[in-house]
Image 1 (spheres, rainbow, N blue to C red):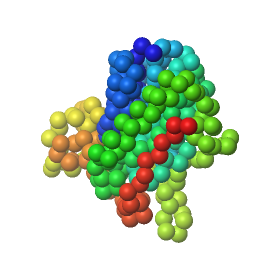
Image 2: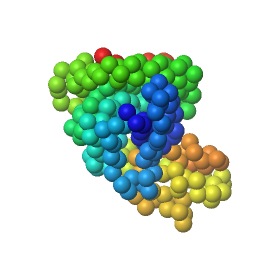
Image 3: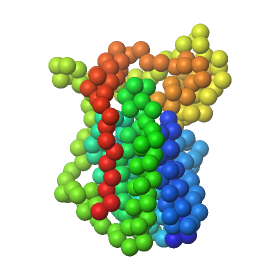
Amino acid sequence: MKQIKTAFFSPTGNTRKLAMALGSTLSEELGVPLVQADFTVPIRRQEALIFGPEEVAVVALPVYAGRLPNLLLPYLDKMRGQDTPAVFLVSFGNRNYDDALLELGLLLSERGFKPLAAAAFVGEHAFSRELGAGRPDRRDMRAIREFGRLAAEKLRRGEFPTVWELLKEEPRDIKPYYTPRDREGKPINILKVRPKVDGGKCIGCGRCVTLCPLGSIDPRDVSQYLGVCMKCGACIKGCPEEARYYDDAGYLYHKSELEIEYARRARNVTFIG
């Protein structure tokens, strides 16, 4: 192996923190350099991600509604490996990672990667500052580095299971995206919900424009949108004046229910085989 290439999508920084710690650990353990491929913003997704046979791929994405972010799938579909060993990771907002890890493992396996190890780690939820608050924290960072050391040992042994063997899963269909529901079980549709801007707080700095992973915020008027919103939390959590917010009743209800139901400290899960 000549280098570790860490590729990630991380609107609020949690996935990046985990991915870089994992990549750095592998780099130290294997004595090879680390390079990063941050494809969070549109300009970084102009060229497909290609990994060579002498690289170790670390691929990390956040979990949205129990799956990989659907708006990124066209880009991820172009990713290619060349019998490239892959450690793959998803970060989830204290609820559950559902089928996201399996989905990522299958995607990589079908595109020329050899699964080596996998993990699902907790990060602060995109909707909330309470759900998974402050995570990944010190305990999480110790755990991700230990996972990296174990993955490096496995690479030295040359062990590459199938995704099904690694995740201890039987072949099955991936479930649909998680659907928020009210207390009567009726679906809550927040697909078209977008953050609002408090004109009394906004200073027009444009940071939200640069942070938006879809390039959807209008740079001429940051209260307007040029495209869809994936509700990643980047513009809200990244605003220095806390000027962006949601006021949609369904969204706020769902956020509140998540904070109540999943207030416990969720566990990280690792798969080494």
